[in-house]
Picture 1 (tube, rainbow, N blue to C red):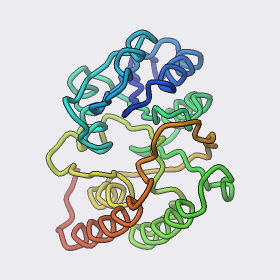
Picture 2: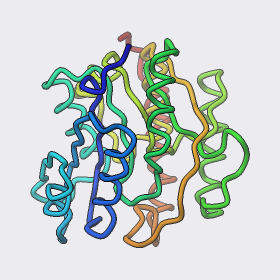
Picture 3: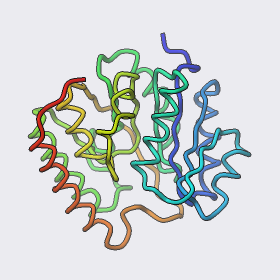
Length: 238
């Protein structure tokens, strides 16, 4: 049995003043007894203020450190405060809180350490831009080949962790700007198990995506290099 008091909802947010409060209220609707942590990653707007007003606990980064660091801040908070499970979702409103009970149910029934919400497990999602869809498919093929398991959405930010994986993620080996394909490959090579569940994403209603402009080029090059470096390392054990 999973108690809601054992679950931390983690929301990394950067300049999401106009959207994050709705996300927090949505979480309250589906999991009213859970603690919600917003990691405000150096926002220049009122993200921290509206998150507190909506009832979330807030940790502020002094400046923008990136989504990977924001997530690790949340993982460290969870471990230090004894949470057994973390479910992370984005602060831009694209991840519907309606799927939170599905994550809880899957955590109960699976032996996996990580549950990934996949936008593509049941086919292509029309709310995902074509270039992101194509990039995700490419890295999905690469990771699936390397781990000998099919993963359809290695770039999904809607995930649930058990304490086993959380304790690994607070270590120095976690150093991911974008904890996507390279992160999942690292987890697998360290003996952790993962499983996907189908989710849907909602259209972005505003704000700036981390994949705007030339960022997809940087992301793609960095991800290939990161995967290559991971393959050169010796496998670790959890």
